Length: 284
Image (cartoon, rainbow, N blue to C red; front, top):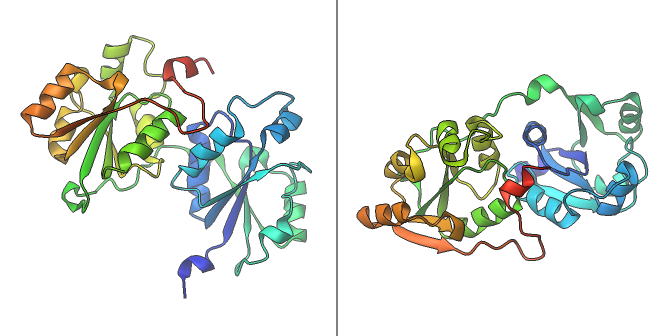
């Protein structure tokens, strides 16, 4: 018997617009309960609820959410009934072999949702704020020699992990096991200025690690454009990949010296999605 069939479905519900790390933490905690099924508000439903268009269109929100390692399934919700009801719940849970769960954040909990779950035989699970603190990263004891594929390393600030980064990770992961080295706070400040980074290194590492295309995220310990040098020497990748913006002579020469393939990828979004630039998104 497939043990995964005995895991409950964990429904979560919302627009997930302008995704933040506390929402990813929520999804991570929800995934500990079972298989996470996101019911994502369409653009029209988001407009109906909030009175304005979402900052990020539904196809981009969907792409991002489906890239998270904590998400198993996603459906777009086009018909809004109530924030206190899951639409078409009887059809959604008809094949479940164990009682499904509706997981909600503490600040979104209310008696109406509890009543809905009781009527429809759902377990109502409130995830308290105290469970969503910190930025736990899995696979911290990974042995770099365990990779059965080629190893690929990339580095960067990743101060706002947007859909363009996700697409970059997706493309690079096709080359082998992907290791991402996130710039440490002092070096990001050195390279980009005193108002950087927006997010501390542990949070940025967690954000990157949440993407399913990433084998392991680390924090750099060097300085300058080659702040990832100590980590690269530890990983010993077959390939070091950059996008066109990240191509630097220091990186190219380092790879030549250490016999690492240097690969430059064009910066282009996932088909159908807008191009994203972190410095612009800082204004959101």
